[in-house]
Length: 83
Image (cartoon, rainbow, N blue to C red):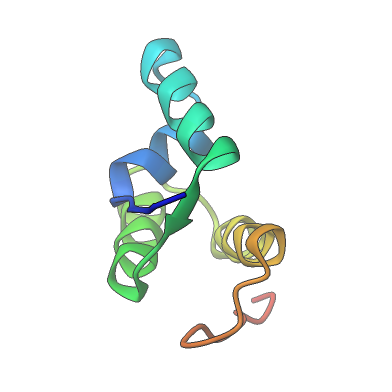
């Protein structure tokens, strides 16, 4: 199975569930495909969650850590402390 590189929009729709159709597509891809999430994408997701959606940093930390835990990502990713 080929890996898919996903962008911040997939993760944002997946986490925010603010658009039913886009959330369904993001969920299907994230939960059923082999995906690659670049460090830059994680940074963009953090920025958008904090600056656009006013999500508290502690929640952002939990969201990103859950993503990392779910996919057992270890290389090139530093676990965020609960701030």
